[in-house]
Image 1 (tube, rainbow, N blue to C red):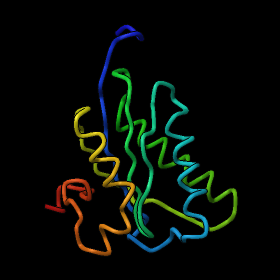
Image 2 (cartoon, rainbow, N blue to C red):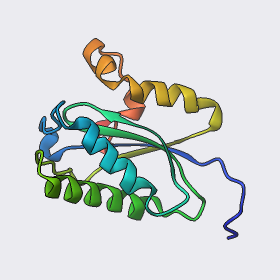
Image 3 (cartoon, one colour):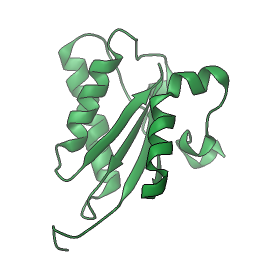
Length: 140
């Protein structure tokens, strides 16, 4: 496939800490999100629109190239981000093995970004969108 192909491939990805433990402290949450953002773009052609989450999970909104292999790429982002964060030493985070991934179109990008940006508020108020919170088939 040509590298210069036009594409609008958007993904929303969510994953939890191991055992859904509250491992992501507010003091170092933004540093962890920066590490995830850096790991996400390392493979090239990926644009990160939003990273956010709560104490026990992370949401990532990205535009990806058609050459990307999602399962392999997500594994590298998750594994690399926990490794880098744990090596940096502000805390420790380990991810559970599963994740949720939803594709969406350009017209939904602003809505999905806003949803991720306001994660804490959605969880506090109980206004979560279940489709973007699921991490495995057993969830629903």
